[in-house]
Amino acid sequence: MINLQKIILSAFMGLSLTACQTTYNPSETLYDRLGGDSGVTAIVSGTLDYTLKDDRIAHTFENSNVERVETLLIEQICDLTGGPCEYSGQTMERSHRGLELTSLHFNALVENMQKAMNDNDVDFSSQNDLLAILAPMHRDVVTK
Amino acid sequence: MTGGVTQVEGAGGAGLTPWATITGYGTENSYGANVFYTEAQTRNFTLRSTGAAVGIKNRLELSYAHQEFDTGDTGPVLGLRQGYKFKQDIIGAKLRITGDAVYDQDSWVPQIAVGAQYKKASDEGLLTALGAKDDDGIDIYASATKVMLDKNLIVGATLRGTKANQLGLLGFGGDANDDYQIEFEGSVAYMVSRKVVIGADYRTKPNNLSFAEEQDAKAAYIAYFPNKHVSFTAAYADLGDVALQGKQDGLYGSIQLGF
Ligand code: HEM
Image (cartoon, rainbow over the protein chains, first blue to last red):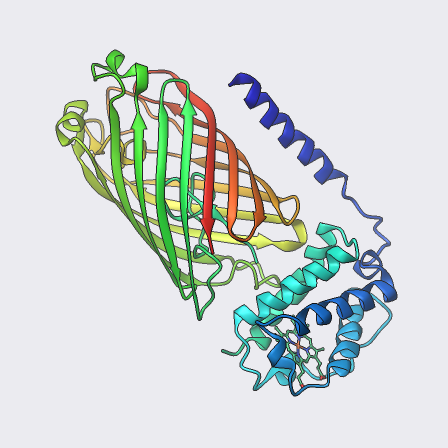
């Protein structure tokens, strides 16, 4: 029993140490941590690949120009994470109006993005930093 | 995005305290549910808790838990029979009032919920002999919970009005005090990865029985989510002194299945 306690406690300490070691160079933007242009492009195209094979949400893209969404989403993420871009698309409220999206759809897209970020070896903290930027868009994207 | 675990009284939350989140992966148009089993082995006692909860449209959570506090070999020391078990049933309801712990990342406003837990303990005669005033009681609470994605943190605080002695296992109210007390519960969790969370909970408790002082409870845990439907929690918990048998600390394990 005592030994087990020690093992669990040392597991905690080990984890909190690794947690503390994830410090970033302050001049590095989230954009850099996502892998810059090639990283963000790969994340977005991976997200859309998973999404178009995902029964929960593939249908929402049926009448859309997926290439346009891909280009604009890359540009938007680049813009929001400190990269050298300026988003030129429509507002989130406008572009998702009429799609009748629910939180289930939203969460499914987020899951696909997490998978794509894992595929691209984005560390967990940077993944959450990106999700923290996207999460409030739930308000505009989800209407149902 | 983030599934919690079930607290010891059946509500969605961390080990010892509720979170303001509604249990399961349900959303405003769907349902979530889970079942759990928790066992804590302290120096003299074993606490088992098992139950289920449903989350309805990310608004209302209904839960049931059954707890057994097994006195094991310490039973006879307390003048009870070997392996005597204090038991209670807990029916809970939690209503989300405002906010979204996960989506509202651009504001400090937490998700807020209020809840109630009706608890009914076994063996009224014995509880009365120990000084308790009632064998049943209602806890009411308000919880605030925030996920801070950019810090990989989840923080929660709960204020609870309660008369429960040792969560209610030793009845409600007592010879030393029979008024509702406001107790504080706090919890912090750090998300190490998508599958591993470490955290700690703290919970204050009333002190209603003159025969045995009650202390605050604390727990530190590691929870593993191999997939969205299963989680395992291992913890070190310290429930404080229980029934004059000194500090009751030990290991705690919990398994949860849900969707
Ligand atoms: C934070 C989450 C989201 C972001 C940042 C985002 C971003 C974008 C962007 C930049 C566009 C293009 C806007 C334009 O055409 O000017 C777009 C369009 C679109 N998005 Fe999203 N989106 C999100 C969530 C979702 C979700 C959850 C779904 C469905 C599951 C979805 C489905 C679509 C569809 C179908 C279009 C094309 C609409 C059309 O044809 O005009 N989006 N999104």
